[in-house]
Amino acid sequence: MKKRVTIILVLTIAMTTFITFIVGVTSDRSYSGNSQDSILPTETTYSVIHTSADGGDETHPSTKSAHWEHKAIGGASFPNAFNISAGHGHLKLIMKNNSIHPVKVTLTHLGNTDKIYFEKIIAAHDTLIWANFEEGYPQGMRGGNYILQWIGGEHVVNGEVSGKLASNIHDF
Image (cartoon, rainbow, N blue to C red; front, side, top):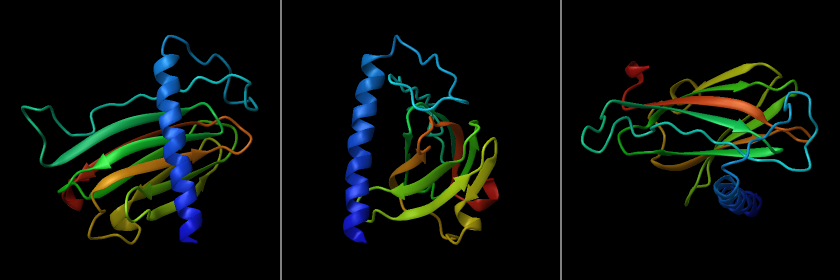
């Protein structure tokens, strides 16, 4: 089982690196297909939108909470990466599937644990809310890098996630 998780993790990291390269190379192009009804197109451009996940700027960092939004549009599989800093161990994710097809999402801690926090299916046009303190992790999440992987199977992924990190569950 650990070997399988390690292989999936290595493939996910390789895919993330490849996607980052593609986004940089194709930043002046946009995906024009309707991902709601499409089977995978022969050419896909990946789009990632990041907002500040550190809760502040370098001169005024936040010690209370951090917010961000990511889009997952294009391809049969799409990773959203983020980091949990020390002191911000409580996480709430609101994931919305904008497609007419179900999508599987998994949250994995990268590094020496490779812990999978969840693997869930989001129905077409549905929303999933996940909070660590409501799902069996009341002490918070381990600091480090995480991947929220969207998997659409034969269909193009079209989703969005907003996340919030906080030092205390009462901040939600």
